[in-house]
Each structure stands twice: as structure tokens, then as C-alpha cells.
Amino acid sequence: MEQGEVCSSSEVEESKALLRLIPIWATSLIYAVVLAQSFTLFTKQGATMDRSITTGLEIPVFHKHFNKPNVTVPMSVWWLAPQYSLYGLSDVFVFVGLQEFFYDQMPKELRSVGIAIYLSVIGVGSFLSSILIYVIEKVSGDGDGWFADNLNRAHLDYFYWLLAALCAVGLVLYIYSTKSYIYIARGTML
Image (tube, rainbow, N blue to C red; front, side, top):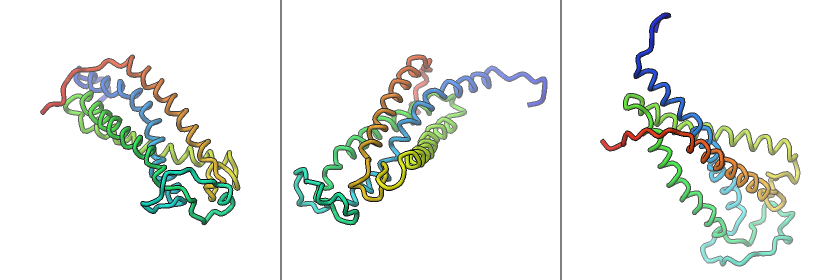
């Protein structure tokens, strides 16, 4: 477009549609940061646990294993089932909903951009998650920090509480941004 040219009304509307999505996109990043943890820390936790199928769900005594980083903790890996179940449910509702939302709220000509914006939530969230872990490692220090090599001495509980707080803040910001969002009823039926 050369200097002095005026944008068409459809170009203005397309730009407005894109700008209206930014608050929803930004608040969705918090969820993506939390989601990235299921691929890292959950796996690390599971690697230290008893992975046989026949173990029960009794709570073991950890003090015998506290200073032994290479010993399998006599705790069933099945204790991870609730957190994996919650992640699975949230994936179903959040990502399907976000995909539909970003696709549906873009003008027909820009729907592929809507899908790209949706996918960028996952990528940028994973990147921010890496930054969060880096900062926490630097702040909590080596040795018995939040992410100590010996998970029996680590403080993943602190990290999970931080993630829960981030989710709560993200939820409040998301609700606020959705209340101010002007939904455009277009329908995604082909």
C-alpha cells in the first residue's frame, strides 16, 4: 500500500478482529505455561516411582529414601493418575475451545491466521515455561532448590503451588477479558 492510500472497510474490520483476540491470546498463555510441565516434571517424577502394575496406593514413608537419589521410591506411579487426568480433561476443553474460538472469530479470509494464533499459544507458552524454570532455578539455588536432582530433596510442591497461583490469576484475567470481548456470531459450519 502506497502512502496516501486508504484502507478498505474489510481491511479495517480484519485488523479489528485480530486486535480483539490479543487479550484472549495473552491470558491463554498462562495455561500453556502450566501445560508444558506435564511433559517434563511429571515424567521426572514418574521415573523415581515404582512402575509395577501390582503396587498399591498406600502412602510410603520417605525418610529412608530422602538422601538416595538413584533409589526407586516405594510409591506407586498410579499416584500420578489424578494430575494426568486433570491435564487430559483440561486439554479437551481448553484446546478444542481455543481452536474453535480463534478460527471462528477471524474473518473467513483470515481463518488460517486464527489457527496460527491458536498454535502460537502453545509455542509461546512452552517458551515462557522454560524461562520460568530458568528463573526459579537461579532464585532457589543449587543443591536443595525447587528442582534438585534428587527429587526426594526437591521442592516440586512449591513449584506446583506457584503454578496453581498462576492458574488462578490467569483464570481471573481470562474471565475479565472474555467479559469485555465482543463476540461475533459467524458460525463455523461448512
